[in-house]
Amino acid sequence: MKNDLKPSILLLLCLIGFPQISETIYSPSLPAIALALHTSQAWVQWTLSVYFIGFALGVLCWGYVSDYIGRRPSMLLGIVTYTLGSLGSLLAHHIGALMIMGCVQAFGASVGSIITMTIIRECYEGDERNRLFAIIGMALSSTSALGAVIGGYLSHYLGWESNFVTLFLMGIVLVWYA
Image (cartoon, rainbow, N blue to C red):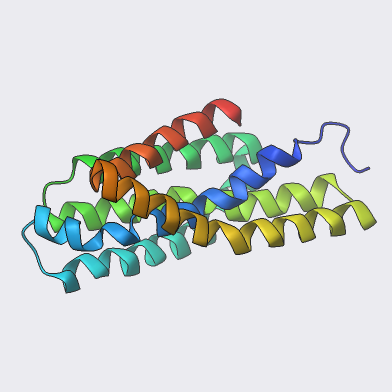
């Protein structure tokens, strides 16, 4: 054991999985979002591309930030950024605002991927680390599908806005839990 204070496996799974759920949860709502924002399907689909751009920028940034201010403060800052981006996405009344807020959301969400892997590498060794990486691999392979299913149900029964309400609430819970 490298570190006497290990984060729980449940926390690590939540932190590594929320970026994928966030990206896929609102995918089933794209047609409804296009109607609500009075824009084309093509423009709404661009929100997914912008999400990936924000995510890539975050991956470049958060590792350096965590080296300077620490893993936990960086994680919390990233999740707060994600939560504010989720709230901004909920409140967006124009496709441009939704794209910007999606980029902010993804930038913050990427902290879950980059810093969680760093934490695992620093806190676990050998077979325990390998076992944890295998568990995380299984979780990652299912979170994208889980997000789309959850998003489909939310959108169908509660409207497209419910996806962003869910993501905002998820961010608040993650800040509290982390």
